Length: 217
Image (cartoon, rainbow, N blue to C red; front, side, top):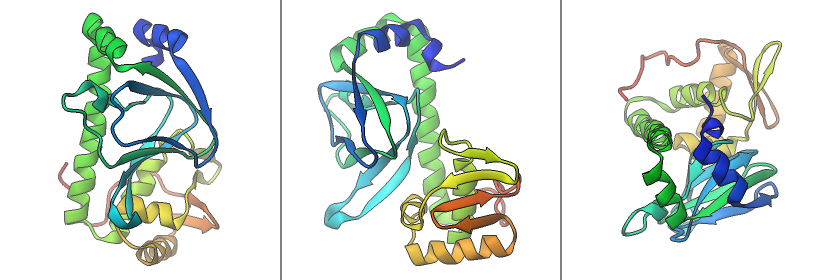
């Protein structure tokens, strides 16, 4: 069941303010005490920013994903987080107090929201475990597999086509662009992938299991 099938979400979309964003346009930066947001169309990067211009890409937001939920917390959380559109994107925004009333008044929606946020938290735990237990090549392998289910991935005759550059992939797996380039060459030699420019074709269905086994998660 899509979260858009929830009556509460349908009411939210009907009443919320809506904005569109250009590719690479900043949607949100830091804690927003006033609003909670919902991806309607397109995709966005969830980014953790650090002093000195460094950043990590924690994942991608797709239609149906909420963000800015830190506005529901006291004190507000979300310091260092940013959301940036990957391509053309549309977002619905609702004031935090109204969203809080919606959650407290609709148990089915509250459970759906908890499920979404729990899955996102589980992915963060997996990323931390991978940094400890997998080398760069296996982290790249796992990340490419996970991106095959992204809303922007394209299923083609030979596999799944991903549009991602080496810098973005490095920010997702926690290593340098040079290490990502070496990992991609290794995976290409294994005929797991094929690369061309900013595109990666994931060719095999079993790339989710690293050669050294699964990391604890």
